[in-house]
Amino acid sequence: MPYSMPPQALIQRLQNLPKPTTDHVALAGKLGIPTDTLIATIAVPRFLHVQYQFGAVAEILELEFTKMLEANVRFRKCKRCGKYFIMKGNYDTNYCERVAEGETRNCQELAAAENYKAKIAGDKAILIYNKYYKRYAARVRVKQIREADFKKWKYQAITLRNECSAGKITVEEYIQWMEDSFPNRKPKA
Image (tube, rainbow, N blue to C red; front, side, top):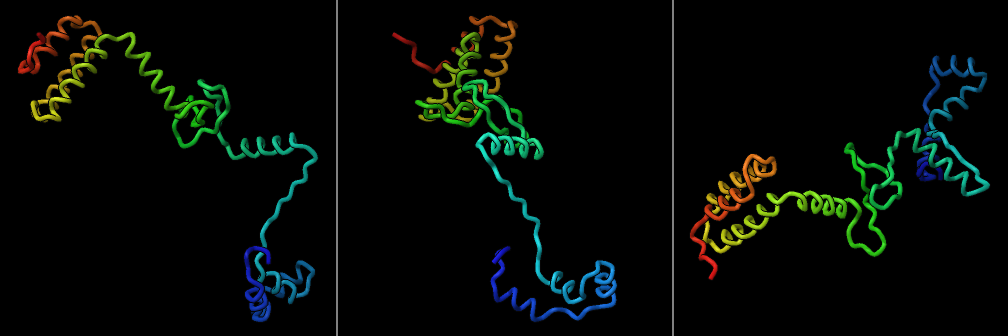
């Protein structure tokens, strides 16, 4: 049955039609149809149905594109792979979530990694920070450095890293501060 209504439910509705009121009689007279037909029409649910016929695949694609425009679906060309994608959510992105052939990650993840590498390649302060962060984080894991001290160091290191990137302090001063932060380290032989 249409509209997912079981046949028994439709029969039940048609057998238990409501009694026509004066409003029903007036409306049926206005429309020029019998009152019983009006009551039966009200009892059975009706839905709009749209059907399309196509002669070519291009017509299907044209309809799909038109419906996307009507629904205000936003799409963009991926700046990494060059293919079009539908933008999801309310955020602005330049990369799709498609996994390119021969890759294991999608364009968003790959672009983020590439952008990060490009950012740190030209900034020595970030490279120095990453080196010492890894060193001191390893010491925290083996309990050579207390976690509270590490968190305090991390905040100061980020502040000095930004100052070094801005040119307020030199790279040598930044390295010296990093070396002096936790002096209990054994010197290299």
